[in-house]
Length: 477
Image 1 (cartoon, rainbow, N blue to C red):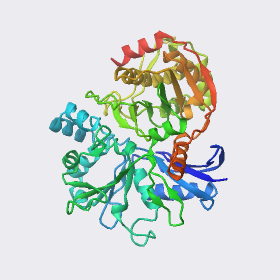
Image 2 (tube, rainbow, N blue to C red):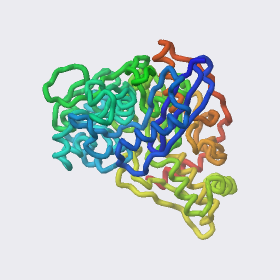
Image 3 (tube, rainbow, N blue to C red):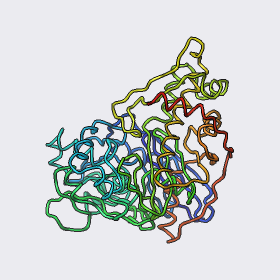
Image 4 (tube, helix red, strand yellow):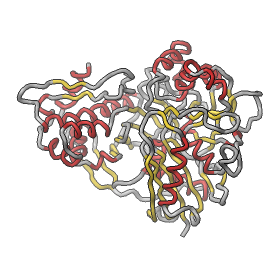
């Protein structure tokens, strides 16, 4: 039996799956926690990856591995390969003004045309502009910029600071993939290349792609690998795949095809689809990302997803099962109660300074059941607005694949069928981002993308209740 491994280095934890190359059967798995916060020392990710690999039985009998991970995070390295400051994660919104400044300088339409996205606080370019303006001393030390999965892939292959790695700080060995690069706002899915002018506008310094050996003291950006290209090997000889952004990894793990729209409910919420043609939305609502297979991945993201449910469950002093039971005891529309769940600001719509709000409370409607259901309806309505946006960009769905931990909550599943006006399928619980990494590992090892079966745990017909979205739209107006 030949084994391949996939990694999901997410905001909250690191998961490793080991699968049989031939069948895709899960052989073993492991996980380790990540620290909380919107800025994190990447060393914590490296420790968690090593712990999760050990918990998954190690790599001694594994032929190939690939790392998928959270997108957009800014990892800045000095000439000795050391991390200059804690990484700013996708959900750190301190760069909101930087995003506005970049749009003012370049123009939203120009950004969309050149790199398929319009800057928001989540994207790497805005974090680099913030670094330039807020920490100029650190900005001057930057020798390379990587994303979380880039840095972990580099470390996994044996590179890193002197004394902490087998191969030392070879910054020219940094690699990334097209899906993660497309979330920086200085690499374009349509062009398939870095836009070094936009990078220079962000950091205030010139950049070059690793391995080009041109540009003098220009900041090194990871070499962009193709879908089946190998990044190299670990010191022990395990083949390392190109890696991917988390959503592109999930699309690979699900085997998503044309007509499949994936709605993922994790720390953040995302709506995305695999399409042939790149998207360029000058409004910035739909990000024109690349996928991990050579195609495009139009995507919207919300900052407030599963954490909304945890917050309201805590308020009501119940666990997630209790929240589900309460929600299912209320009627669709929650008695007129509406939660607009912008607890952490919001990315779609782009309201980084927004706060959550509750509407429609009366003496009669203020019940635990209505609050519980309003939390689920509000979270899903935000994602349904995202579905409308990707439709407006030209995506046509035949079904919705609902994934993420919250997708297994019975109330979330039932309410999703009432909010979305398309058939909803819930794949069996799984680590689909890590599975996408395993698909990449198999692809890089054999040269052929595997076709592994994905089981479905629930299939729900359309059961739309218009009142839910109508009152949500009125509340957030």
